[in-house]
Length: 207
Image (cartoon, rainbow, N blue to C red):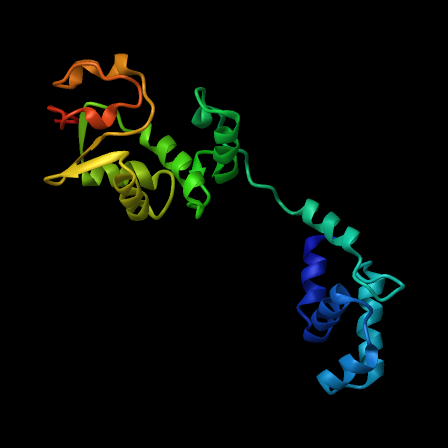
């Protein structure tokens, strides 16, 4: 059985009820027939199709092993681009990035705060310390990763990875190589993780 065949079977209301009952325990044919207002022979016929497909065993219980095989047959998302994860991340952080990125796209915004911080810090790497960005530029960069760029932009500001003033944004958080940004900051090179101490940069991007 493949996933399409499973869907064809499960879309029938009676068979779907039987799968639910089988997941809870042994199917009671008489109880299901009464609940659906159908003859018991109709329930037995539907049950026979599920047994023939291997979804329900001879004990009239759900065959979990068949469902696991079906799940394994589903298309798998592409792994995160190795260049996106890069170096400098802990094993735990790399695991989080691998879970929420497929290729170069963010599949979803993590609901758990700690995991969201890891994703946000990775997105912050797209903005160079010492450069100012118009909101349209920030939106353009973020939408390359996820459709909800407004939420990502808000999170980046709320968590201190970006700072906004007078309609422009600049990076103020996240790990970075200070040798790449020290000349742009009026306070000189900052220590790693000390971007928040820098004032609004004078340099602009694309102008």
